Image 1: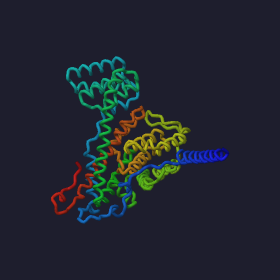
Image 2: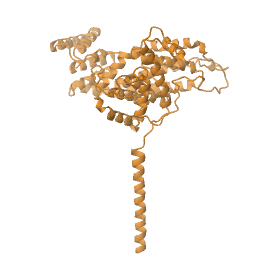
Image 3: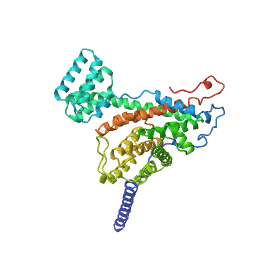
Image 4: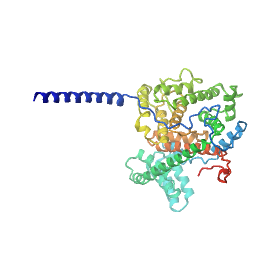
Length: 452
């Protein structure tokens, strides 16, 4: 009997020790361990082009290479693809530019009734103009927004914009029955369209990954790099042309007629992109790394404010970012989310877009928030094996409008905008590599590879 008690006591002691060890392991390794950002082998991690081709050519047939002296042609080709690509319709952009109603109640009512009458009589163009006017003078009127959404959905089959208008109507009137009914119908459709958009991105990205394995990608990558910097600084108002910017980066010589600030903006982005290239393979992205990105972005422009959180109140249009006293805690929460499994389990494009928006919403710096956010967005895409995204200068208004819509509570248009930009850049790369064709003896080998 005594022996049995001793054995039981020993077993209980062993179990207690095992439970204590398990508890220690759980708290130390699960709760306090820094999770790492997952990444695929980054195919496009050479934001700063290497001097030699990244991919070795082990194929037993020749490739049609693009010579360095043809770089001007390549640059113009890539730029022409971006310019010729249809820009996203800015159907409700003017709505977002107005913060308060500018029309009287009777004017709004009469305009809306006239728009409905023209719609019923089949005069769609006149109806559209009246709906636009009603939304412009009454951007917070739920009836106007809902009716306008119904018109776009029924007459133009524009479910995406209609859904955005229904959502906006509900932000101002949460119990609006017609808007609730309409959004219940459109929300699943929009979700399906967004899913299809991500599938299209993945299909193009897989195609491009196979394409660049052929080699001869260096010149395309280098000229795309110049375009990337050109549009990144251009959104912020930099007036350098892409040719001037390339001259500055290649020679280090001053560009005549351009300000010192514009020169420093370009040099800052280049340094930040070099740093991003290093961070692509980092295990953890924390506040130190985010401050490091900003320090490089703004180091040449404003050394005293670079790499430090703001200590003053700022305004971004009608949006008022959080008080500067809250920034340290908000950034800790941001970093926790950035490295969380919840974020990493999203589609990489959605994850990257939300990382961009969340940082811009906090607005932790006096200046350089947009550039820093876009770099973090591209770091995430690079980690996941996608090329870096360009937001074109010509897309500036749509870009800011989608951010403003996100501030109102609907982040989907901004995610969709980033997804469209991703498709845009994939198409540019695919077009730029169209001459990487096989020159074997077969008829199939003589064809230029095209994406379908």
